Image (cartoon, rainbow, N blue to C red; front, side, top):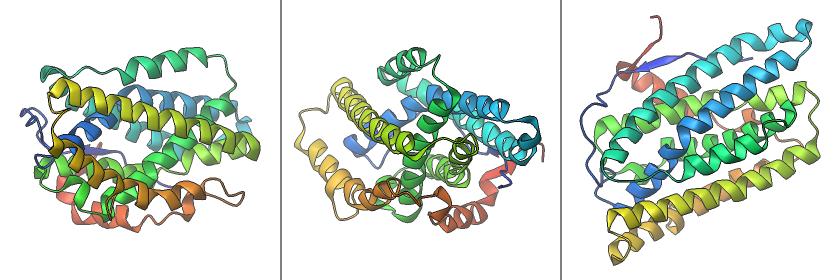
Length: 272
């Protein structure tokens, strides 16, 4: 089990965001805005899933998971709050969050599914956030030119996603979740995550008025398919989840620990 520190982020989120806050690149900005739009409802789903997973364990087996689960819930609750503040700026810019209502509708549809299904969805999505986190912590290009406070926000979030990448997965295994459903649900989550991310990105660009600019699509090609693009960099770690011997701890977490140490001035432990 892992000790998870709940951190308070020490940045100014009251100051307005530039419309193209991510280095002046319309596509990169729209894509990261889309991700942020998904976080508040998604983080709440993950919190509820882990809480339910702990309660589903026999009392004599809960103790081993309780401390890590509290840290997971604290970190995710902080992410939910911070990205709600970020999203408020996006709403004031005229962007409309269509991802969240779709996500909430799916959550209602699966409200009566057993807890292992909820944990499998959470573990699958956490794998996405963990491999994206490593990408953001090792490649400069995705956030190049963004204000320091916004780079800090995204890399702090990334570091904590790396820290708690195993929590839901371990609970799923502890509740005897099987490999067939783990992999099948991961494939379903992959399709939903990618299509929702792209749909919201496209809508953001349309609302922003940059849909038809060649420079927008040049930025999109660089982000998605360039030498350090998402597709090239994330293909192999995405496939790792399909292996029978996969465990999230196999992913290198040193970039997260290194960033947190180097940027200790940007956060403090809650209660510290």
